[in-house]
Length: 70
Image (cartoon, rainbow, N blue to C red; front, side):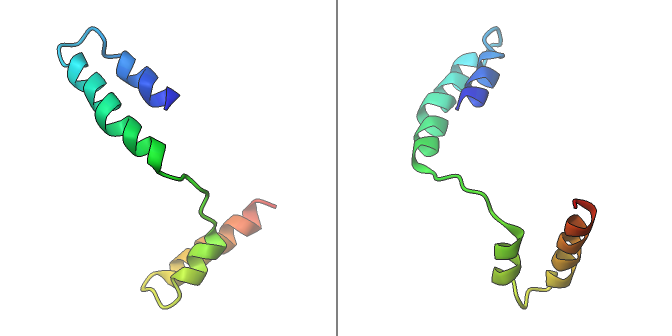
């Protein structure tokens, strides 16, 4: 929330600042208060996407990450 609020405040001298502030207060804040942000792990994605068109490419990318981040 802090990051987005600071970004909105950067426009305080612009003509549309009130619209941006209203968006932040009436749209962004209520949604942010209700969502749950959690990490998504490649292992979970790979399991869920079995049979997907690009699963081999995803697995290959993941394997490269494991190899180069040791």
